[in-house]
Image (tube, rainbow, N blue to C red; front, side, top):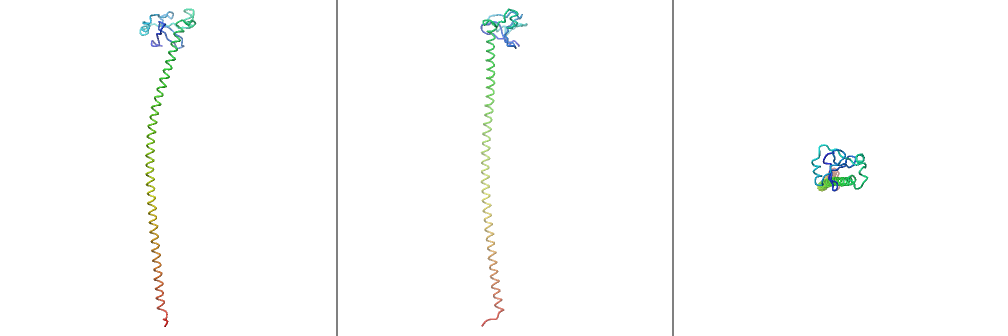
Length: 192
């Protein structure tokens, strides 16, 4: 523990702190007598502590030096100081948790904003893809329609060609029949 752990509280005019076992101790040079001072000079003592600090610890050490733990008397500086410092520690702990909560909430808000921005970008991208998909579908429909028209045109041309071939064949057949009749009429005796 360092000098920054010491505190001055109202009604106890010596620097006090909680040690690692949560027992209260006062600033002392001999581990027996607290460095009692005025309320105004208490903080000066914290800011300019003596070189050899040897705290008096409430509990067993206090009992060995003074015959009681100090905690057994509610008006003694041990329970009063411990109550205030423990309350301050809880408040400080709550403030730390609250601060950490606020930092986490801010991080979540930042992440939420990033997600919203990404979501908006994704929605815009989806709209673009849908637009492109719609454009592709329009082009596909146009291509299919063009293909049908070409096919229909081709089919009409094939039909015309077939009809032309049929008519030519029919004409050729007619010519053959006429020619055959002509030649037959030449070779047969004429009836008088």
